[in-house]
Image (cartoon, helix red, strand yellow):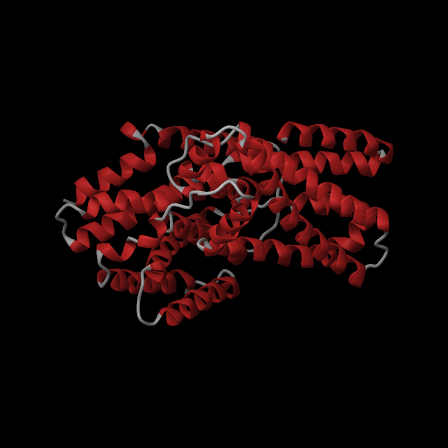
Length: 398
């Protein structure tokens, strides 16, 4: 039964005959070789590498467990008779393998290529991956004392960060992993199925007000999206402190570009097929949907840019009206490009929402914005041409 359950989930995540897995591993090898032969090295402490591996793996595992598409698959699986422990550990094992092999593997390859990592430290990084998978599953599973699990997760992260190269870290993670397994031992398969994760958010009316209700309702039902926004706003506060003295005023446009890296609100059509069908089914929906959607992303971008500029003014000073106008331009340009990508090139080939969050397309708009920031910093006379280009893009949306 365990093999059948595991194969069913693995076939969904890795594709028929696991064709997706060799391609992913090949890409990891190419990235490792490409970075390694450059000779570029970054000195990082073992504790930092372990924390990066653990936090990234746990985050992706959490996204996989929270996936709406996984909830649909889970519902069908739970209709069949199953053995509780075999089902739970098969599900966690397959999601963990998906997380480690298709997502963490890329970060692992980068760290091995650019950090001065000793061979003896590699097994410890692998232990951190497995430990993060078990911890995420144990903390995610519902329980009466959820706040104790949150404290447990936070304390574990602090211990990993402060451990350095201490020899007792791996035994501690092993004991922690055993504790996570014991918690999962008490978990039922139904605990991993969330009814609210299966709700559709189809827009029922064409009025702009209903679209705005949809946007805020959508964010309210995806708490991890709100967490991502909070992280970006914290980054907007911190960037002036770290880069103000070294980069100077020329960094501000690049800061606007970095703050445009917000995946969740830029994949609305890609992650909700029902919404996309509802939007595309009737004539005239392009303008009715794309304009409010563009304004929604613009307002988020402007909030991040305003936080960034206020922080810069407090810490470094020198913010002018021209920089404020630049914040408006970059926020609007980023929003327009994001909506154009979603409308004309939505992401289709994904298995669960985690694939959307880590799809290479997420970097397209920030890279374009960085190029524009560099162009504006070097040649400010290009700004009128960029404004004309922005006006053309808005006409395409209309």
